[in-house]
Image (tube, rainbow, N blue to C red; front, side, top):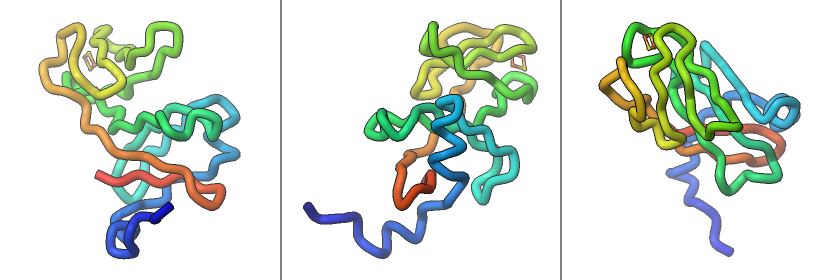
Length: 112
Ligand code: FES
């Protein structure tokens, strides 16, 4: 299989390790190279990793991933977002910023 080109890999930013991600299936990093990022998944579901900026677009609280609902939920005013960042329930009106995520060599990477 052909791997992504070297040029493309330069855009990937390492945000943590697979060990950290696999502990809870979530990796929250407030000060990654791309800013706050929340990655959801494990190495077992590496093909379906979800990554967003978890800063709520309403007033800036940090949303949490709810596995049972398959949604991000904001603790402040209960806004809900789908895995692709889209608003499902207000008061937020704008989607969460999303990233592509991948696992490579034991590390978790995201890219805008
Ligand atoms: Fe998230 Fe208000 S800050 S719903």
